[in-house]
Length: 216
Image (tube, rainbow, N blue to C red):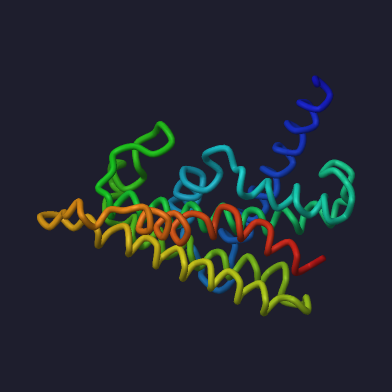
């Protein structure tokens, strides 16, 4: 049990190192000449929002890829582990984008035991633009690491589809609870299932598995 726990922790730490590399690439993106102030903002925004939580969605990609290769994560080659981790972090970026914007829409105060990003001093509604940046970072990461792969377009299409489904689920959630027009008769099992399916299930369960099937 101790050996297994140690390996899980090693995999988690190795996974986090890939995040640091991706963050560095984005901060040095030649398409936009970040000044020191904007670099500091992006770094703080990413560190606060992207690697938080249990990272189960991202790590699930590595686990799934290992399963398809009939190997445990620690048995994967360095290149296979890295590419699977990049895909996993793309999912974590999507989660961060959704949560940052969802907290604003819901007027929330805390997320994962901490103050919501938009409620931090000097952030406020700048968080809306941060959410858009997080969304666009995904395509830049995919471009940097997969544009020469035959399944690159399929990856983009898959991500765009899940982003659309998630945004649609968020819309259903929001319009059924508009301030001043709450109608409990609207809330039923079918509606709850639709919200769960589109807002959460596609990004949490479908995306980690389907994305790793493309390179395999």
